Length: 213
Image (cartoon, rainbow, N blue to C red; front, side, top):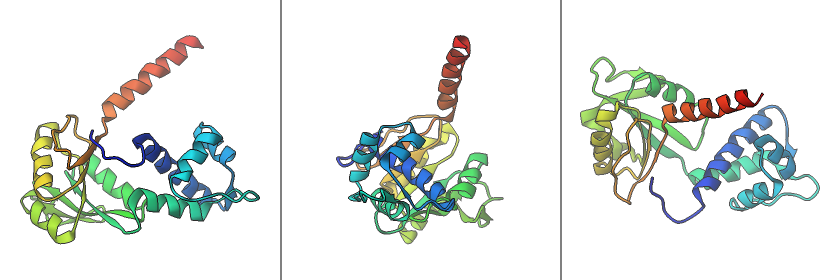
């Protein structure tokens, strides 16, 4: 993983979590909440909540606390900027389809606008609401659409090759779901989600809890 100076990565992760929680509370009709209430939802401290939210420039009201709708907008602006950002997804297997189906219904400032695969049965089709293009057209399409971010969901042995194609196309941020690390220049911010490792970690700590019961 590589990063640039700015808001710490852990703070960004927590802000994203706050946004999801707050959006859910807003849908349930809640309009205001205090830092200690958000702390209870996130198993955090009120002081940490306040420090994180100060990064957005939003200040709570002493009488009503945070206005949820306004706070969600501020977090959105902090995480994704004031303008919509476009994403490309490479690899339309089961995971790629699941991400397409889920993501575009969850976020307004970020959207997956193009997907890519080398399977001719998927190319030139709209899959989970997103048109799929052939991988050979990746660079041209990314430049045409003005796409800055990409998600990789290809098999591990193809991931580095895909990442290099994305680099050549001008992508500056990559989220990698392939089970291999990527070698990329510092001009690209990359993060990796290893689902197997995450499950193994959960399994380990769950077994420790069972032994203590």
